[in-house]
Image 1: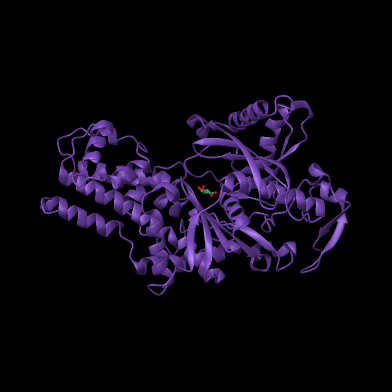
Image 2: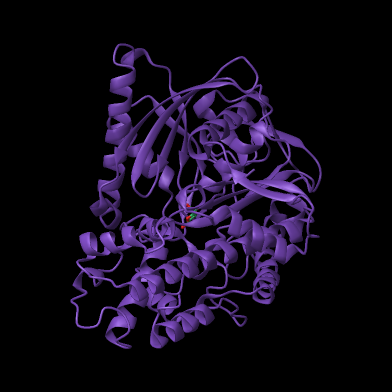
Length: 502
Ligand code: BGC
């Protein structure tokens, strides 16, 4: 950077101070994370730690035909998954539908109608001939938002995240809302399980890898899930579940450090602005600093500040193209980081094409460093959630299954994240990493179908804790429920059908 003028050089140094998260900070964040994870299990604090009523990994013997619905941010995906007789094998057909932007801020009826229309189209195109004779297909519904689940086939939306704000869904159970729209169309589909994408990722990855302990998403949003034992979940104590029974916890750790007396997140003024201008200020503090949805926005706000207030970037140029909130996504940053040319000519062309800005070499150098710093901060800070679960659970070595656009596509994310884990967990140099985060199987497709299969299997075996509607899939004669701590008893099917907590 020999030819970079002094004012730009000192601004780069300033940005480095703002965005760099050193090892000590990573450790401090991780320690506070452990505190908040534990508080969540007690039903307090920032992190919801939602019990998901997924109680174990599949054993590979599950069979049958299932639907999976993934209500993602950009697309809606419907899959049909047939778990075949060969252990661990499956066939999959799938279709994608665009998720119109306006639906994300519309009302509940429009949302569920649109989704049910897509499922109808899927059934029409894949089962035209047998439509009327089709047996009811159990569906795993990947709903990647925080939901309180008293049962696996139930989920009250706690709050929208990732910029969604559909009216009439927060505080409501989303399963009957979707099922009503399915019924209106006479579709042979019923929701067997409501699944978070992290839970789906954990279960799908654990299907093929016995060392799998944590599922996480680094995408538009971020979050993690792991298997806890019921004895360690004080907020479920009143249910008298067997203490050694497993329960997958959807942490919803994007909410880490949102409020409270121990703020540890190294927020910049840009992070504060993003939060204040979001539809849900004061929520998802950790996610808003790190997740894919916000990376481009941090970059945009910084560029606007350096132009408007410091006169450092693009003086005397019109930067209106940078003024629309969320006009840049994470791919803008990854493009800059991936520019193979020393003179950053690809970045220069992109600034001209997309933003109508003539950027000179020093300005390009600053933008490149800024993109790198924002993404590096995201990769490093997002290691804290994983490290905290590992420390809390005593996972000295394990596999972590990860999914999401940032993890899969952002250059160097995996290496930067792994380096941060090494620093937080103090692994000795030169040895193989004991905790390895790698790309997971398709959690929102195969994972959701497997969880639907596990639910149907549990009903057939009479193990129906946490299933609201056992009648949907042929209720068993006797239903096992825990009567008192550590014991298993049985109740009659009628009571279970009424949906009494079990
Ligand atoms: C949601 C989580 C989800 C994560 C990743 C967050 O905004 O609250 O439920 O797992 O995004 O998709």
